[in-house]
Picture 1 (tube, rainbow over the protein chains, first blue to last red):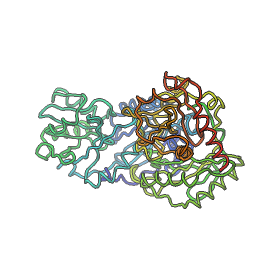
Picture 2: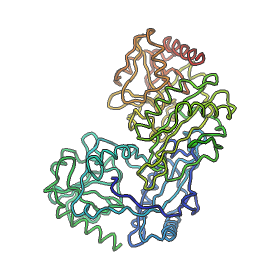
Picture 3: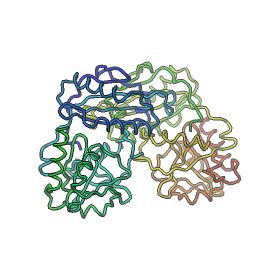
Picture 4: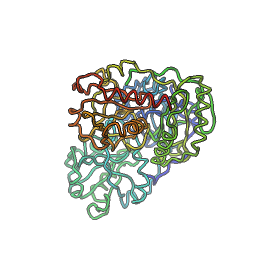
Length: 282
Length: 282
């Protein structure tokens, strides 16, 4: 989790309708996003300088905002144009975009009036090639996010436990709850049982990369999108995560348990390539 | 919960070592308190113009900050003097103080560097006298806060469910989890079984008012501080909440279940008076 450090963040961002210098982008301390963790966000990226599956990200962002009853008064076209302009001003060839909608400045620390909405453009994190060649390790952690279908800013638990992840030389945590496998702190989880692809479907955030991978696998592998029990983790012959900054990344170890023979399996390799070709060709 | 609206917030606050106009008190959008809900706080108040049990509040605040590995580089004396100065500048006879420490401006959206610390002074909420004369209603809600021993800013669930509280004409929610009674969104919960006082002791935030009430009850009532099962709620002859802004407030209904005869019981009345006398005489 703490392995990759995105570089300094470029110098413009969008706030409440205007593109402004990044260093001027502030919120008042009465913002409920700050005072009460009342905020939703989304994160999308470019491939070949073009926003990838932006429509899906915006649909999900709208759904998150709606889940918190926060009105998002910008059309997909407006947001799309803003992102293109931020990318241009950033001079980055590829970039990530963080869209955040907060509860806004509150008169009493509990009631929302008018949300604050901002978009930042960020250098994409640069993960080591070994993550794909050798696969990564995860540790499991008992946790269920608040309102799992909303991509909220609620990462207190994730950040607090980062030292534990580092202590175990792991990439991240795989959240499990009540005997069910859920998701990583910011990514989705898949496993193969031989050629059958299995992935949790409930009490998680439905990732856009997850969605693309499921599309790409239709007709290639039998797919089981369903509740996954933690007892099934030992039966996995391969595993991987999916996420916007990581694409498809192989997982070869969960806690002390090696998955399969501990190397990146053939199905995961195939899928990693399939996804890369799709994303870069899209 | 949404019953009481504290008035406009006075015009000075403290931020990172300085007293500044409230309207100038901002944080950058890279603050992890905003981006990742990584922040702790505390809330204390005055009685007769003097901070009430400030030492206990500050001990708890330090404990919360430590739980998030955030260094709080101010002594109790410095914070105490700041609070007194903010109160003076506010011209309020009595006030509440919100102390907030955040993850600070992050270079990468995950790593803390230097916390932001601020203190605001607020008009105390003004609850209807009926809350004490007739008692209030709570609805129960299945929920366990993240890191319950830390007073974090994690109120996403509480704010999101506020409409439900209003729909049931309730004052607030009583969080329960896995068959255990826990706490309200911002207050602690007590019940009487005849003359025995019972209150949850684990997976909750240990309130300062709760602590004072337990001190006041020693030798007055037999006390059971322990895990409380939700099945015991039906056996309660009286119930009340405790909190910094509310003191001791009687609870006469939980969901559809009336507690005792539905009026404020004699023990709760006695305790409300005891607490008031203690607080106002302190």
